Length: 107
Image (cartoon, rainbow, N blue to C red):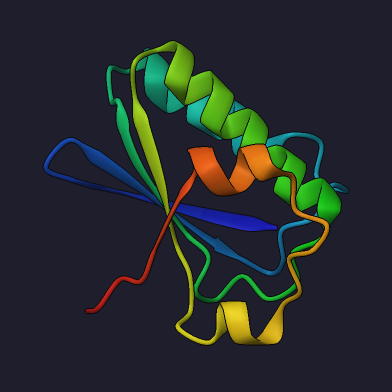
């Protein structure tokens, strides 16, 4: 996993490429924690070019959400428009679908 960080008007945009899996030892969560320490409370996790997302990667997203929520922040996900058509979500915990906002970012 590779994470590129951009700041726009006090919003941290984390562009994830090369997959989001559980193999990376909490890189996403530690990145979010570092940015929170700097004072940013709004996050967009850009998964448009992320490629593979496995259950461990989903767990990292939920942990990142929890870390941000505890600091009164907000986190949203930017997904490719065909994401829900090509991925099955029968296994996704109800928590993830109700507490993370899924958005389509139009550039």
